[in-house]
Length: 214
Figure 1 (cartoon, rainbow, N blue to C red):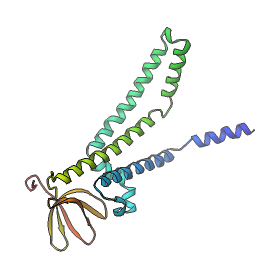
Figure 2 (cartoon, one colour; figure 1 turned 180 degrees about the vertical axis):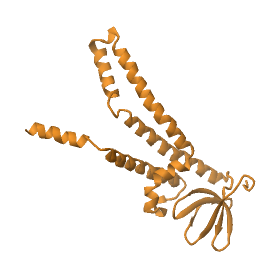
Figure 3 (spheres, helix red, strand yellow; figure 1 turned 90 degrees about the horizontal axis):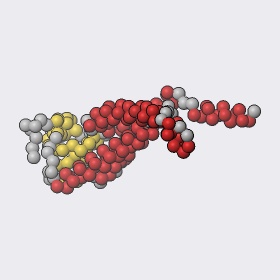
Figure 4 (cartoon, rainbow, N blue to C red; figure 1 turned 60 degrees about the horizontal axis):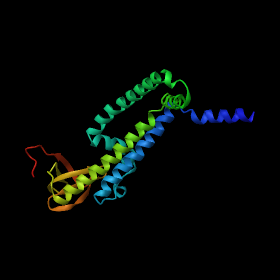
């Protein structure tokens, strides 16, 4: 009786609904989104948590993905390729296991273990998660170091024009923004400048290539 209860408990623990998987997946992406933002702004000398609302935290995965056009493209390409690669591995090792020299002994045991791991329903998920970790942290590190270097050397072009409520107009290179603040750089300062949006900024205008200044 006790054994049956233990088995039932284990089944209940390991059996999750689609909603459970979605919640776990979102939580995972949330952690990666926050880590990306913390790394990026940390390299620029900004503690982003001092300028972030709860909404910004909750939307951080979407903000990271949408801020890098390359990321959704890479995700759309790599995830299907990774799934296809796993299918190919399953086919290859299944075919290999049918060869006579792999029918017995240690080679058979080794192949059986490989096939067992590959044939698991969600075997590809850990590799997708690892890919996401590398992408989110990599974009945070790469973007942070690149922006820091450009900020220090003043090697960038203005991307936007900020119009303040008091009428002041400033050409800037926007490094990032959220619902509360805009983070930008100007040629007269090699440090990140931060301006609150509400009650301070009237418009943010994207400059065209003709308007952009060196």
